[in-house]
Image 1 (tube, rainbow, N blue to C red):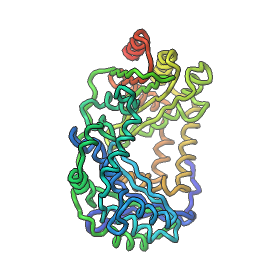
Image 2: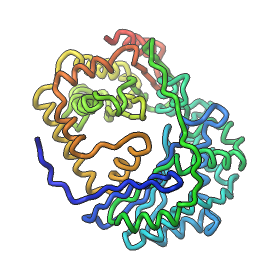
Image 3: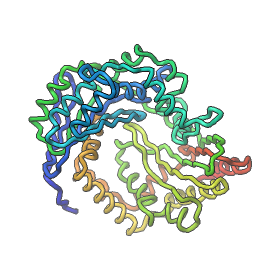
Image 4: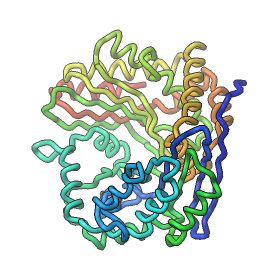
Length: 433
């Protein structure tokens, strides 16, 4: 068993009286710090009428606080401290992040806390125009959604909010008003629904005192619940949107194993055997040997109760079917023949190296311990490594057979395909295993 030489660090979990969880990660070897708020808010927690409201609210939280009551003032105050506020809304979470020099950490926490304790929600019409412009980037001249990620996920989760578009429909964003924003804020941004994380050059006692002052009075609220997506009974599924671009975008997705599964580490190794650099199977076959695409990747998108194993690529329109054929052939081969000892060892070794590098990145450490805390108990380094190193070549084959099944398969394409090519893509999907 490898014994890592890790830098000194300490992780603390404190729960404020309101129910807000505070994760402090002391990394004394670093010279920066990051403050991140994670919240259970996103399209997963919406219905049809509210779809897009989580993303809309994220934008509105940039519009100022009681002390800095417009977007310029709040952003200028943050930048005066050496930071830049970043935020993103996902399907099952939202995060707000501020990276700071250690000497401005205390005032930074105070200012950061105002975003959640004293937002003003002014300038809604300006923000509405900005979000509508963002949505237009995903539409063609006929108003069709050509975002391949959204098309694929709507097909994988057709009757579940994990399939909703994060930005929501154009009509919803046109309709949202101040009352909607405030209602959603009260519902989603209660202390019990959030995890605040401070990582880097910091000390727990000082952080706890600053956080208690900054956000200690946020109402407890209610932790949002959710329903898991139903198991897939039939497949494959296929979606295609014509688009007059120079290339066709293609996604091959399988419903996969969530992080809570005991086989998740084998699934991680499986993904790395397929795509973990230019010498691994996917890029080598599709790009280096056949020249079917310039870009192709494989990854696992995890939710707390589900996951997607995804191959994503763009190619010339004529190459879409050969690209799909070769990708599915690679997956089928992994169901029959285990990876070599060299492939397995390389995947495990590169996983460990990547995980070790996290200790030099306060943002990544915040995601590991704080983002993980939002849904489940984060695993320590030693346990993560032990689970990966315990994966055998036969485990990889077993998980490949479990995941890469026709009933789990979804194909999504956006591009310019002739009817013959579209039929060929569908036929390849139906012929898989």
